[in-house]
Length: 413
Image (tube, helix red, strand yellow):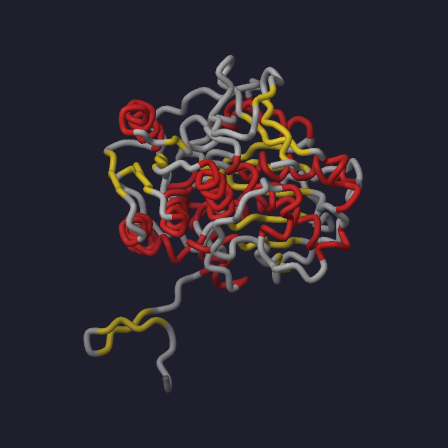
């Protein structure tokens, strides 16, 4: 792995060899980042070299670990211009394999697990990371052991079972799932691929930053709004921008990074508002956007530092605002977003209203997954007694004919 020179602790800066499996820094528990010989890479890897390469995340192979990829075609998702806001672009990660941005991180993670000869992987997940691990582990012929809250969307559980993973549903939150993995991993011989407990999920996620730059002709936007549970995507993109500058592909300007969370679980927002460098554990976390229900992100200190360096912000939106944005995006943009992704639209509305972003500034909103994986949750929300629709995003009437419910106008099929 000549391009990948070492792993570096993001707290103390200590270096670790990259030729064997690593977790976190044994000294202070810091997140480990993969570091490359970018000076050498720069001499041969140019922006022009990307022309004609496959449209997936491995097109950036020079800045990814040198190992045979376990790939299902992840990455290079479209950047769609908004039909409502002239200067907004929507990065639609729901078109990834397994229906979410998690495919990127787990592709890189499982690639390295196979490279290292690891046979059993374990993960706590709010849903989508579990599905991605199950799929890539199946492709790599590696055992996957998955721990999810029992109330995850049905699609997450079903897909994991069909991929052949060992699934345990836990009466609790993702933090409870993580505790179980930590308690059992040594006895069971599992390698823990929890968020930021190994270095390569960040590497997969950073390709989102490379893509944003490439798809915008190497001119970064004024802002990026990113739904934040564990926050790996935000960390990965910031790492990508640093690497791109070192490669000489972009300048020193950075987007204002925005972390959006649900008001029912907003540890990063609380820490940001209070000026703290780390987050506290959020008690009684509750949101129907399962991927945002992370009571304390492991990389909180990195997320908050990026927000500060980028002159960004952390903002909370209510579940009602999230579901309104989900329906609005579908009916206005033709994008059936995951609720976590639609939170970025809810945040943009607020930031436009309070002047944080101006209408003429280019802003990228991340839809992190497809709404198709949340049909049971969406149906439950739609059936609730409290209406969540606005007049602009109202639900078409539904008629019942012969016992079959049909929405909207009935005509020739």
